[in-house]
Amino acid sequence: VQLQASGGGLVQAGGYLKLPCTASGRTFNNYTMGWFRQAPGKEREFVVGIRWSGSPYYADSVKGRFTISRDNAKNTVYLQMNSLKPEDTAVYYCAAGFESPYYSGSYRDRAEYDYWGQGTQVTVSS
Image (cartoon, rainbow, N blue to C red):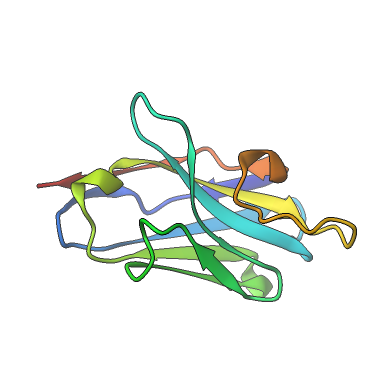
């Protein structure tokens, strides 16, 4: 099972990037897909997630600027990042967490995810 994130790069403040994450090796039916990021010297933090139903939820720091979507037929989730700021600079990781009917967690914690991609670097210059 692999999650392949791509689309990172160097962009000026105020710019935009779109990060796709494609899953292979299995389908991710009934999985929440999430994006986390980790800046140098900091903990990996939740950015945005999307439930199997398609419902998105965002960290306050990116609300209104980032949009997550998923194409289940393509086993791909997308992170559209607009109005980027230097503080968005980090390695971005996609992840997949199984939505058990017996669990009602927020899926904002790393421990709730079962599979992780390798990360893609996003650098925003001021």
